[in-house]
Image (cartoon, rainbow, N blue to C red; front, side, top):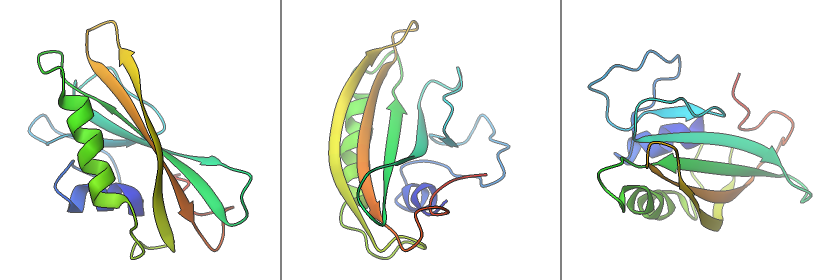
Length: 130
């Protein structure tokens, strides 16, 4: 939740902890699953890594079909907003690891991923969304 909240606080998306997004929301932030709509969105997924007290965080973004750089611009903004953060609940330090272009989906929407490592005190419970 703290990564999604930080994305929203930076003005990069809308995070509603209990869902219920509406059409007028800016770029919605989801967990783990990428829905077919809307075009522009952010998906946050935690994953295990082999480093003690560390959790991987993938942030996958999708841009709109009519703006070929919208996914890339959003990933750049997310990296700027999150890299080096040491003030997020449950996270001692969040660091940028890598980013990659995933490609275009069937609707010609560009997708990219950004990967971070989160140093946490309890990897078993940190960042995993219910």
